[in-house]
Image 1 (cartoon, rainbow, N blue to C red):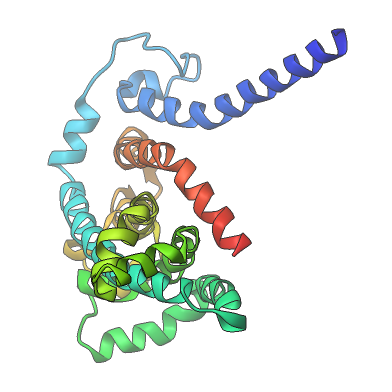
Image 2: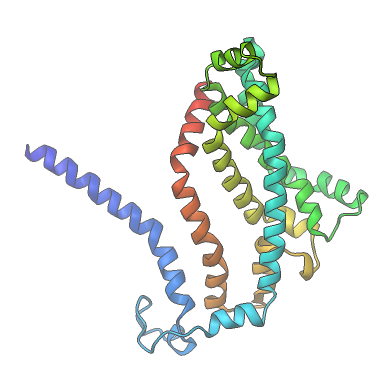
Amino acid sequence: MAHRQIRKSGFYFGVVLLVLFSVLPILYAVITVFKQNSELFDPNANPFIYERGPTIDHLVFLFTDTQYPLFLWNSLIIGVCVVVITVALAVPAAYALARLTGRWGESSGMAIFLVYLVPPSLLFLPLFKIVVNLGLANTIWSLVLVLPTATVPFCTWLLLGFFRSVPRELDEAALIDGCSRFQAFRKIILPQALPGIGACVVFAFSLSLANYIYSVTFISESASRNLSAGVPMELIRGDVYFWPSLMAATAIVAIPLGIAYGLLFDYLVRGFQSAESG
């Protein structure tokens, strides 16, 4: 009994450490956003409490004296477009591959995932040539064109697991009842995969925000930058770091995405397990 209590206590202690490791950086960032400069650069001040009172001056500076709102807007446009393209391509591709039989059907998921594993450092030069030839350099549309090359393979692989978990008998029953193949997919199969599609939406949108190599390579004008390039390139001035504004710029995006990932975590795990087993 004592051994069992020790194991249980050790488990909860590990969970607490993991939670602290995950939460403390975000907590410190949020606290820093509202710190006064005189307190922020005081080595004797406690970093986790407000000894001289909070302030919103850093948020005001971020939204009025920098181009951060423009970066947010550009990122929103890019993210929405990437999500639409990803879902439009990944959903029918995953369904078609999930219904393949034989050796090709079994290996299709891994082949798709291997495409996603190609690092951007190997792709940005040939992709930059394509972007320049299409006249999309220094525009947000260059990222709209390029980022789906990363999101579509991964989301296709993830959705394969959800579609493979839907019995083929449902397709056949719908066809017998007079539905066309598309109607059977839209009315019967697609609702079963909605949680997976939601997870893919969050993944594709977050990847469009986080990709740095493509954002820096394809866009050099401030007016067209997104968050991943605009924050480090524009908010860091030489060797001067405006830490509260930088913390605010990251926390404003990271916290909602973290919540979305937390809500969809079970669906992501289920998709990984189904895709690997398939």
